[in-house]
Amino acid sequence: MQTLFSLIESPFPPDFSALYRTLGIEAQRFDSARNLHRALQKQPPDFFVGEFVYGWGNNYAGANVSNLDVTIRTLQRFAPQAKVIVFMHPREEDHIGKLLELFPIHAVLAYPVSEQAMQAALQPAT
Figure 1 (cartoon, rainbow, N blue to C red):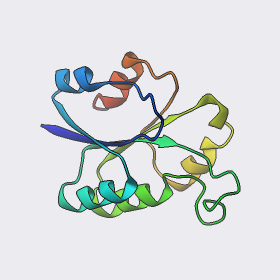
Figure 2 (cartoon, one colour):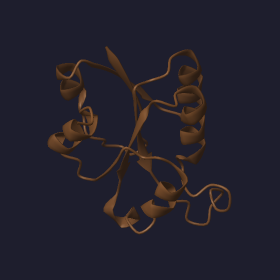
Figure 3 (spheres, helix red, strand yellow):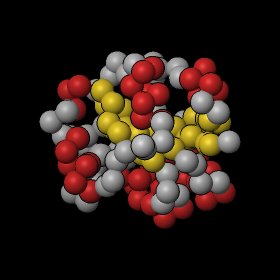
Figure 4 (cartoon, one colour):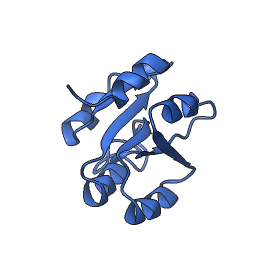
């Protein structure tokens, strides 16, 4: 069985639990990066789903461009095979390129994320 870890901070993320079950993916949602990083050290997931938030001059500016930088670096260390799927608000589209320059991202899906788009991102490459 494949595994998927997610770190979504928005209040109303899409619920793909039925899709995950249909595809034979065991999903775990984390409420903090710290808890996710601990879990990564115990079990590397096949997929990671995170929500991109650009660092608008806050503490992300400089070394990190977004809220996902540290988590993706941790994934590279403990789960280098994990496919990274990023959700983003359309207003962040001008900034997602900065993340793509730094990390290999499997898929970027803009809100509202459809089940069909998510299913396509979870399918093996052919």
